[in-house]
Amino acid sequence: MKKLILLVSALVLAISLVGCNSKQASDKEKIVIWTQASADHPEGKMFSERVKKYNKANPDKLQVEIKNITRAGAGSGYIDKLNAAITSNSVPDIFTLDGPDVAAYVESGILGELDGHMSEGFKDGFTEAMIDQGTVDGKFYAMGYQDSGVAVMYNEDIINALPEDIKAMVPSSDEDWTWDQFVTLARKIDDFAKTTNDPAFKDYEVAVSLSLWEIPGGAYELGTYFFTPLLWGNDANIVAEDGVKVDGVLNSEKSVEALTKFSKLFEGSPLASASESEKAFHTGKAALSVSGFWFVSDIVNNYPNLKFKTVRYPKMSENFDGLYTPSGSWAFVRNGQIEDEERVKQTVEVMEWLNNDEAHKEYYHANGAIPGRINSIDVIDTDTENPYHNEAWKVLKYQVENTNKSRPVSPGYPYLSETFSKDVVLKIAQNKATDPKTIKKYLDDASKKIDGEFEKYRK
Image 1 (cartoon, rainbow, N blue to C red):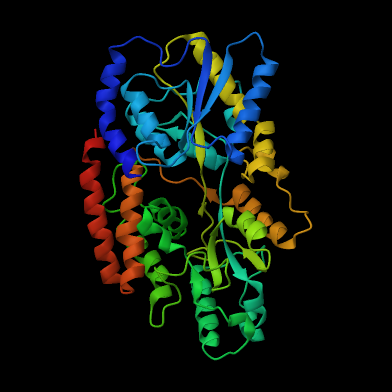
Image 2 (image 1 turned 135 degrees about the horizontal axis):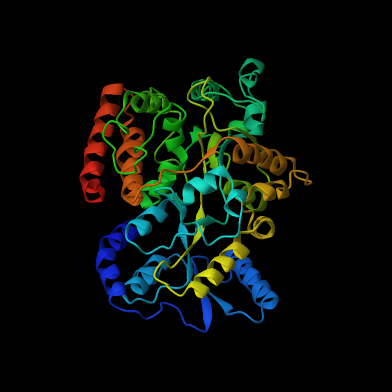
């Protein structure tokens, strides 16, 4: 995130260089794609296979070359390479960006819009969340090649060891429930844990795993991705619709109310911890977990002895009927500096090939990626031999089809996300701040900080 913030600050200079140089960014003899996935990762392999199929099906057109640039390493990571390409006017025809970062590149003039270049009706094949993620100021720029999701998991052995009245508080996988109910259940579990000698609790550490230990290491987006839905589900948000106004939105009464309910996890004898053990839920140390969709394959493949069940992400208000579950992921975008219309036409054609219904089904099989296209969602296999896998994917599939919401579109999203995650979510957990006055101060301070940074985006 920090690298992206520095990148965006340098893009004004980069654009001036591009404007003074008519050289095409990519080799004219081929269409070049960059992705952040390493060549030996399932994600990198699936893109390579897809490109091979395109080249074979289109021998008379410009052939496509894909370059896999791993998203890691100081000075050699994906964003660093992209930064260098922008400043040297050598941006590839197509490249990948994390969905929330698209607006920053649009603001800087790097991306080309897709409306008017796509096949008729192609955009409508994406889910609502994918369309929203790729749209900036009413124009479509990014084709999300997968969606994502977050649900709640619980340790089946721990739950089965509880008294019947507490077990009855656990919702079924097809029921909505609220954050208050979630916290109440966690408190009952923790109280029981202090009195029992049941072997299911032998490794018990916390009632709820929130993965907050990842934030100090730089995983700021996890805090925002996992917990912005608390605000959404209470008719609040972290930034205004215009993507640049924060004061009065992030620090609204409804935001304070939602985060005060979240803070109940740290009240009295804490139910969650900012310093929980790594993978506490996976290793039987937590009864409940706010879990990303990637937890499913990780647990099934690497923690086969863990019996886990999955239920929906809790609502803040029982009567809330809007979109509120977290979603969004990486997307393909195009170089907006290419002026050759025939090249633009084929570039968008290649992007469609990488993002059509068939491709999204292939990506699910190759990488467990949640399809971002309406007609591909049914490829999700909920009839395997593993009942835990099946239930988890039924919940995630329901959320993708019914409640998923894209993260805010903002040119300053990286800074917004980092500040909200570190200065609000993590502070509440680390300081065990549970009173509305303190939480309001955290939100006021964060709002002032973000609004100061966003001044440059206001026109």
